[in-house]
Image 1 (cartoon, rainbow, N blue to C red):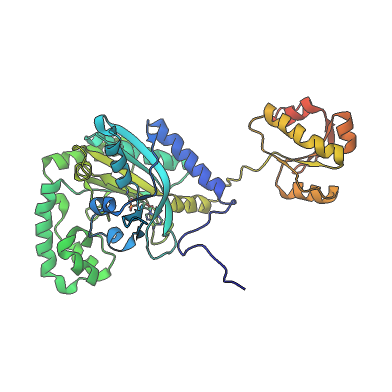
Image 2: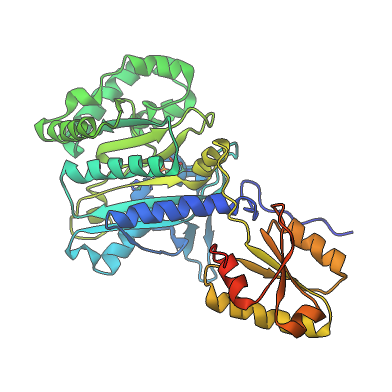
Amino acid sequence: MSKKIQAIRGMHDILPDRIPTWHRLEDTARRVLEGYGYSEIRTPVVEVTDLFKRSIGEVTDIVEKEMYTFPDRNDDSLSLRPEGTASCVRAAIEHGLLMQPQRLWYRGPMFRYERPQRGRYRQFHQIGVEVFGLEGPDIDLELMLMTARLWRELGLEGFRLEINSLGDAEERAAYRAELIAYLEAHVEQLDEDSCKRLHSNPLRVLDSKHPQTREIVAGAPSLLDHLGATSRAHLDHIRAGLERAGVDYQVNPRLVRGLDYYNRTVFEWITDELGAQGTVCAGGRYDGLVAQLGGRPTTAVGFAMGIERLVELLELSGAQDDPGIDAYLVALGERAQQEAPVLAERLRDTLPELRLVVHAGGGSFKSQFKRADKSGARYALILGEDEAERGVVGVKALREQIEQRELDFTALAALLAGTPA
Ligand code: HAM
């Protein structure tokens, strides 16, 4: 027997029973985002590798060890996208979208060769937002208020909003030098990864998970003390806005994010309910990236949320998302079987929202009826030779104790529309 082929580790099928929850999340997000005037953009899942190297940063986990990179038949190096921001920037430059401010959103699969665990997958899905050409803190605030609204609309509670400012390039450079000096003085106590990063990406040492490194980091100088007046005012504006809007937040001076392109505002929404992978949404400002990728200097800010993590929270909250079907049509006898699809199409013409399954594959009345019951439908519609002859349909409620009835087309359509004649 040949070996069974299975899905790749860390990549999952999403089976039909979970799809209604995915839909609820995706539909709600789309409605909320479009309600704030964001337009959807779709970009390819594969890009030239350089795009990610030049944006996410050479010395990041993602680029160093998590990308699915391969040569195509032409020997160009391509990568499955590990995130959506770089592609959005590339597309915005390529299509001249940056002549005016843009509010964009996207959704889709992303790929990272991470060690799979709860909430961390190799193919996962994000819904993300990128805003171009708006400089002020008002738009950063909008992103936070918009996500807060999304949580409310989804009925998700208990998230913590953490914010920080990474300052501008000069402020960060000054801080970086001071941080390196501090870490060098404690290099003996740092974990291996942090030692490696000490000079290449010292800010990442700040969010090391290693207990001993964390102790050292606790005494490190704070970036917040190095912010100039403009960066500080930017952060203060967001804080005041969140306070006025009644959105709780914490300033976390150690929040630095794992991608290199950020400056000033960074933020994360975190839950304690998912174990180690508790960040459900994360983002920040990346004012330098457009120019870095060859576009004219354009400020930018965005975030992305992990759909799998949010779906798991929705499932944990016990919400029932199965929309079910309205009716299952069974037909017995040759004439009835010919009539069934005609009746079904007429019903669909009359009731565009109707969820109706037409039995296929024949079988006895009993076996058809069993299927109807299993389908979860509210009604079984029964078409036998006799009913077909007389132009009526038998209707049996499958979830309520109601006598079976015979209805003509008009009465049936009214019943299925929720207004029984
Ligand atoms: P990120 O922090 O790498 O940021 O990912 C954003 C979110 O995607 C995470 O908070 C998490 O919910 C989800 N996520 C990331 N990796 C995985 C994984 N392996 N499995 C499951 N979920 C995951 C970005 O991707 C930036 N592009 C966000 C951004 C947009 N910044 C500015 N604009």
